[in-house]
Length: 114
Length: 114
Image: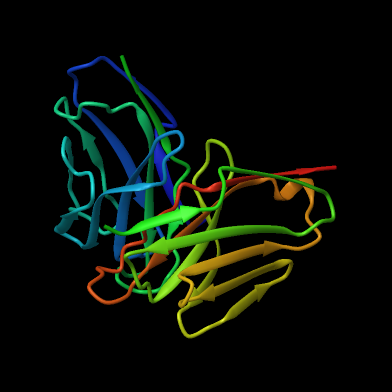
């Protein structure tokens, strides 16, 4: 059963704590992405990776970090430096970046920081 | 900076009618444009892609147009059904100077009443 998975679906953290969101894909896609979605806002790109062991900052990378040690995995860490971390986080993958291919999205993780 | 505008935040129509959603972009010349559907609390799902050299694309009850002169894409759902109720996102990408990443609009929430 191919696809892209994110866990957990809901995550609650206290302010000041780092938290890592999981994203796994078994589609053999080269490119992976992390987006943030806030009410009334479009999806905003946090980080993306075109190949293993390489990643680039998106439009709102401050306060976030990523790693891409394996092709199928692209975890996102929300650090305590992120001023407004409460949001809906979406991971996506694509066969390769900078192409016209569609992106496949995971189900999302809703993070609440209090 | 690049700007994507979707005509309205919400669109309410009667079942059986044609829904028309608008996506306008400025300061940008995308090579292609994608449309996605997003249901509440879930990740977006790809619907259609149209390239700059294509005027129109169809898929079942869906039709997309792309006018590079007007810098606009129209998304039509004919014979709409209550099951079509969702938020629809447009996402231009590609083009000169672009890294190929999608830029998402805020979306239009479509409600189809029986």
